[in-house]
Figure 1 (tube, rainbow, N blue to C red):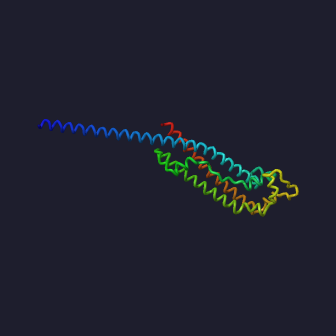
Figure 2: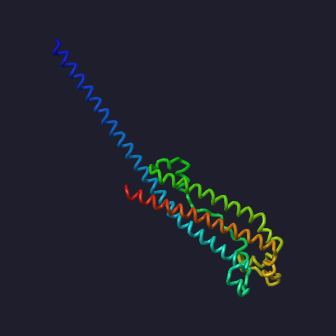
Figure 3: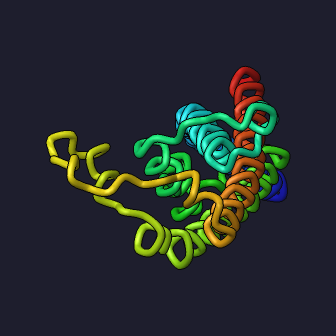
Length: 239
């Protein structure tokens, strides 16, 4: 009887051990599957971010070039570059004046994928702490750019647009956008005289200063995008 009890006890212990081993193996397989799913999802997130940031980089470079063009145009019509200062001869046309005074770039690089992932908390899938932190730095730089763009726009709308109302005959400038209009009877603008006025020069000088600030902030964002692309490329290559 004692031998039978001992056998049953050993059998029961063996069964329990087998069940425990089976449970542990199942848990291990489940954990492996979950980790595999997370890795696949994380890789997809990284690839989507890389594609979005690659496009944003191209847009960022173009926006910087447009800002540089505006900066150079402002310097030109104000007559404050070294070449103009020496010969004091330069011609300002209606189209140059119109473009320089009223052009204002407020766009940001398109970041739809990044914004979608952020709003759905999918960025938390990124396990690489360096990349995750870099996105925080990128967000900080982007918000600073948004602020300076907003400040420049406010000054432009409140102050610089007044030049069109008070200082010039705006009708000749319309021909730049609508070539078919008849402006021969309109009084021509004397831009040398207009741009010699202290108020006008100061307002355009403010726009020039703001534009340089915007260029600096755009370059900071562009640098963050470039560094993120390098980090993402390395991370994806290691998978």
